[in-house]
Image 1 (spheres, rainbow, N blue to C red):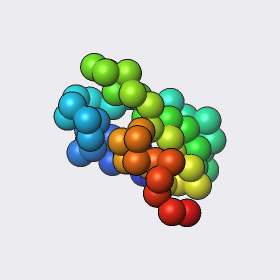
Image 2 (cartoon, rainbow, N blue to C red):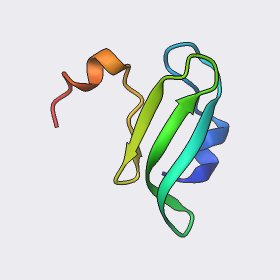
Image 3 (tube, helix red, strand yellow):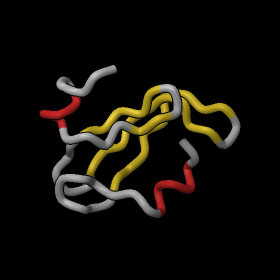
Image 4 (cartoon, one colour):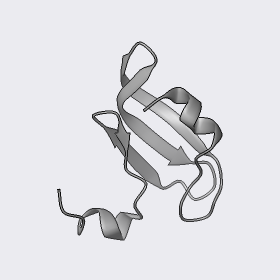
Length: 64
């Protein structure tokens, strides 16, 4: 995921801003980390450069 994406994405639950917590980066690409909602505190994982913005109850049900 490119860090520029932070300018256009928001929390899918309440539409508030997300904060970025980076675990692994390759140049400008964020490979692993977490997006955290500034309002509700919900956490959304970034794995292999892909942010998972599904609501928490749908993440476990989604096929891999």
